[in-house]
Image 1 (cartoon, helix red, strand yellow):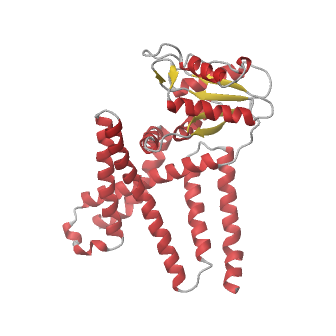
Image 2: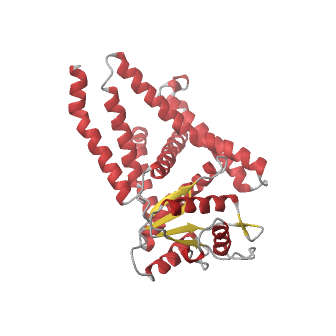
Image 3: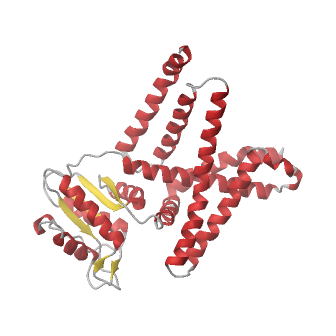
Length: 342
């Protein structure tokens, strides 16, 4: 009993503070990737706090279980890539992008297995003299970037489950391709259905802004196709304002913001897109000065892993993210380089 009380007194306030800071940062600035690091820290503190309730060997067993869970989570990255690559090859055409998903999954999986084996000392079967520094660098590089992907995935899921108020003045729907050039695809109809769900939960009905221009292979604009769908679902026409000039996600936000800024009254905005796309949308919304709440629509499970990986790459290649990711990479591999050079 004394041990439990001591654990509550020592780590209890730390746990409460870390989670309070994490949730506050997510609510205030959900587009910051630093929040994903805070989330990982919160999970680690939670693990240590929970370990304090065990005694003797129970602590070691609990921490080992947590370690194994984390390893399983890391291995989900290559597993999802491999499964996704196979499914895409079966469901869609054979192309380089789909083959790369499968090949990348195999490569990352091998790298992670090698990294864990080395860290756990299972590599005693191989003397260090037989391991090339370049090979070890490759192994730990794979492990580091797998961790980045995992933190990105966990945070992308976390911001989806964060509660939000249903008192919006505007709902922006991000467009995507049309089926037959004039009908919403399943991906797009899921977004529209989510927007309708949010619309109906609002006490004072917001204005819906379907956002998307007309592609070269489309008969009408994506905004018009979404408006037609909304009208079929019983949304009054006066509650719909089309934005039909945009061709990119950034333009979706820029032109939608112009519509909102041109109207009087409150401007609390919900941003609707597929769940894998929300985090990047929020980052772009910050860049263009649009304050909003991101709400994700469901997508087919087989499509989600590949899409989320693409979103991670798009975010990773932004200047700020790339700088901090590479700075962390240097710190991560620095000790290994020092050992080999000394």
